[in-house]
Length: 111
Image (cartoon, rainbow, N blue to C red; front, side):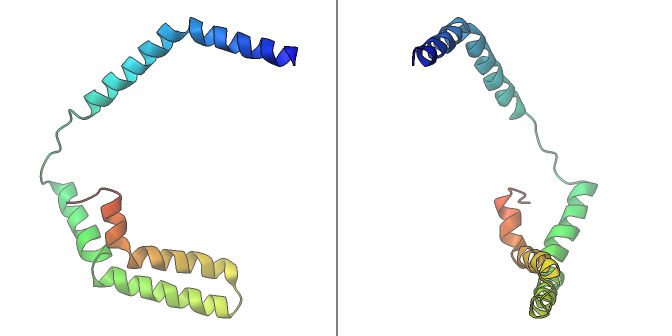
């Protein structure tokens, strides 16, 4: 019991010694985070067009929905044939493709 109290006391003593260091690190983190918000996002460009075609028109469109349904069917057939290691990724991938719009929105990639 005495060892635990002694060890705990040493830890508290070290924390008290390092208060200035902890305060400076916290200040540095706050300043670095505020500098990250100062970046302006450019509008338009080649990457914007690629994103629009790949995500908006293909992934969130009819092609993505049909691919999601097809993956779910493949997963169901694999599960019926007791090929579980093939069924699980197919079903998860199909679910992701079918819910791509909410997934893209929740990740914050809104155009």
